[in-house]
Length: 189
Image 1 (spheres, rainbow, N blue to C red):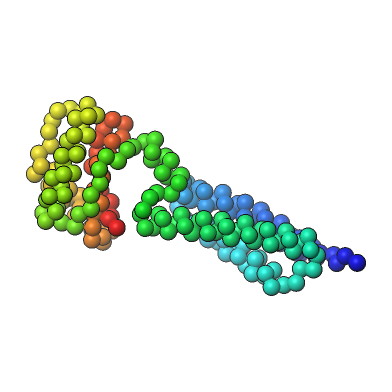
Image 2 (image 1 turned 90 degrees about the vertical axis):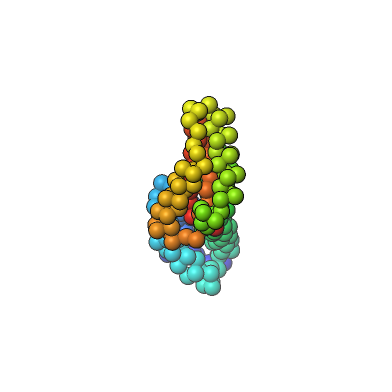
């Protein structure tokens, strides 16, 4: 005798399967920067369905197997999303979609972390030399940027960044984008 599966279970399993597919698309869009926030509402809905059937008896073997495979897929994707979020928050590297896009657009020539532009002048001297070298190699105009104006620019940029983000350290990067050399700053880690 085969136990029939209730229509409610079938509907929930179909909702779970479609929801996982939709959640994957939404997370891909989030990591690519297309949507501003994580899809937390859909994720919470799927977790409620999983929790409801995790300890409930599903008697039909095929249905239980289908449910377990969906939960396994959800858990592996959830782990991937958590790792990617942690990587983004720690600033170790950008999300895969952002990294692919950035690799085509710009290349980082040098980086350095500073707390105070006045105290960290030795680091800035090395960064200044790499900045000038990158400008020379990219064929930019020979107008040389003096070390003092370089430090002054960094100090004002660091001040604005500290006001905005409240960070202690500033990460400076010399970047070449479209054959133009730029100095970019962001909160340091």
